[in-house]
Image 1 (cartoon, rainbow, N blue to C red):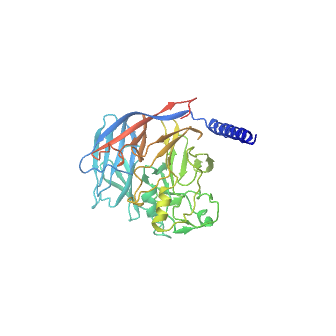
Image 2 (image 1 turned 45 degrees about the vertical axis):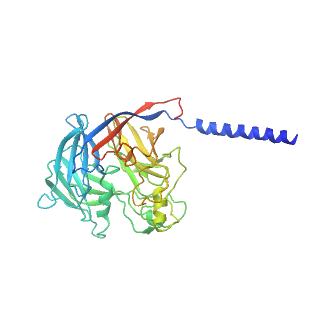
Image 3 (image 1 turned 90 degrees about the horizontal axis):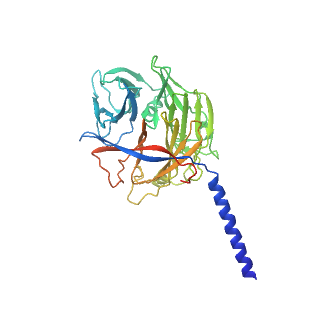
Length: 398
């Protein structure tokens, strides 16, 4: 009799767990997923490195182009690719010295066409505007007089990378403020502006009156950038700025660069995260930090009026891997939001094929690089991008 009682209890518990799991699954309504529709292959020569953080799509004369900053491995040029014809349309060599010299290039971004580019420069405290032939139009000093080492580093990271693209409004360029002291507690973080600004007419340097949010659970000192780094994109149609904090589930939204709102941006595959202090020291801290759950770039798709957010899955470094390098086989997912920032889908990707840190939105879909060194078909002599489109999966559980 006692055994029968235990058996019935086990059955009841299994049924209860099953019902709870199905209820949990049923609360998530995912209407779309990303499906690969085609590939494009762009040629490179022996002087072109296959990786770039300055990669942007733009349109001109009803044609679609890809801006590719060839600045790695001591290269010093801009490449413009014709996306439809999959060929090199234009090469813009840049000078290092002289009246048109642009030394120490860290990144570059086109402003709406192939005629104006904004160049961020490393360790010299300036940014430069050039034309489509590489001629210098104007140089700006972006150091703060009261803190000479404050803004030049921000320019490197927050001005011209595809995941932190500076944006322009009324001749003012806005870019991320991301350099801090070694350790800062909650009270200090709340005083730090998230964005700097550069007036292209006057050269004035300023800040947006929006500071880093107070989202720590405890009043702790956090290493520079420890979970408070963020990526962002600007929706010019709605004048909406969307920010994805590296170590936080929610996404931060600002309309007209004033009103701040928060939206759920959590991956359904990952546990909840907040910025935190890592207890390990030295290289162990670095491994724990880089291998933990993270959210990377967020992108606005103006063609389909949706947003994409990349979620990085936990990664265990192998003994022979350096924590200074990015993991080459890290799985990830892309969360899809509608125009009102509601989650409408999420698609998982393998870690041994795609390079999500080199991606862009185009007319035909979301392009993700396949130049991942963990990819068995990796070839450094060409740029390969897979194009993903939205597919309706309403009613299916994917």
